[in-house]
Length: 334
Image (tube, rainbow, N blue to C red):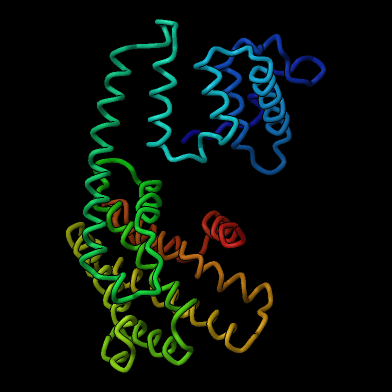
């Protein structure tokens, strides 16, 4: 990652302070697309990037509307204008770019060897991803969640896609699998607290999570026992990985604590609903960030990164730095 000042874009402006068609022409489709994608990353008060975004979008849209693009460029520009690159899944984008690249007529822009390598890379990685999804489907069926927890939503494929957006590389297969299972189990918890459990049952369930002891929920229905066992089994799987990486002694207490915090936050929302209590914004905000499940996903995902999962990193995250807290808050609002 490289950090540049937005002022570098001043070189594309004329003496009147407007973006200059002489320096960045409509014929330069690649340059215009690059400017459009770069302008998407503006931050607060970067006026020049706001102008760049308007300039590039207007001109690219004009090229499409006036039918001034080749079929290949037209498809690519339409694709980029519908959703910028940094908001897309990288592996799905790779498939799109293979098609765009094939349509380039200029030999200098269409290297057959590079294209063939890209196809081989995509197909090999897609095969691995399909195999992982098959193994996850088998895990879900073998766990009999559909029978044991009949009220739960089956969002396994969606869960895998979420994990894939975090880590698509082949060497991160274990991380991807555990992340997908985690998201699936978070759906179990969310539906249990939101849809199924009575307040009394949820209090007993939350207490069992605090104690990490299933004997506390013997009086509960089988579906809630199945959810508890799923949480414990997942933590055991994470622990096996962290033991192998030598990080278990400080990572696992944090993962378990994240589950406890999540269940306590879910219980708080259940109490608000039961008591018809309308929380203040501050109450909702602090609790809502936890029930967004982002904190537990961050903790669990980072715990799988081997040597990168240092105690110093987790200590820093536990201080709720703004760079972590504010994106989580924005995510909860949406």
